[in-house]
Length: 188
Image (cartoon, rainbow, N blue to C red; front, side, top):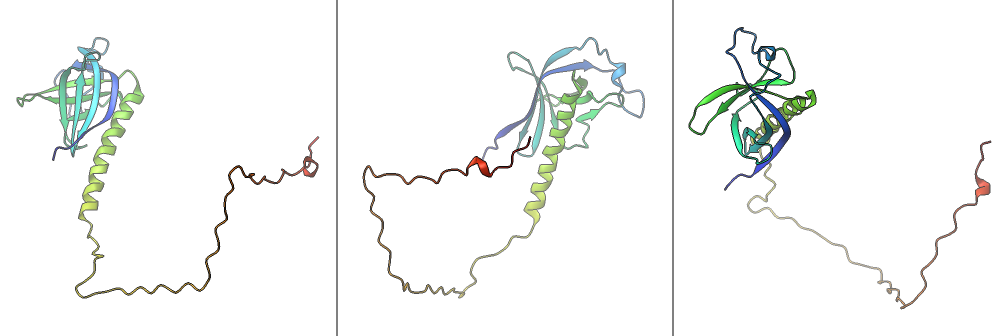
């Protein structure tokens, strides 16, 4: 059975940068990139298919795939935040042939990067909950062999009431009028 794809997040503008090799043990710094001149600008889509998650970079107008990054877990090196900004990430792109490349990815607005972080966390949290639900013991509410249930329904002792007959073109009963305004307390 094929699993369906669900688009978790779409951001219409994302910037991609060539990044220099990492120089410190702390992590990548966006200040080391040429932030005023991105190497590529396009659209980002975060797509879930079953338990797999993929970040796709696509052309804004045609939707043609530029690159993709499979993301296995929140702790993976597939996507990492930089140490000096909340708007930029280092993404490990993977081609269909298995080649990998690390690029910088950024947004013009901080709320876009926040949305990406939340979407990643929500996806992996829901996967974790699915596993927990699957591992809980199942209740056996079926009948055991030879087990029966007896249901007694009491006899009706009342006589059924005759149904009111409806008349065509009959009048509809009116509701009582609303309370008079003299009962209200008026503020001056």
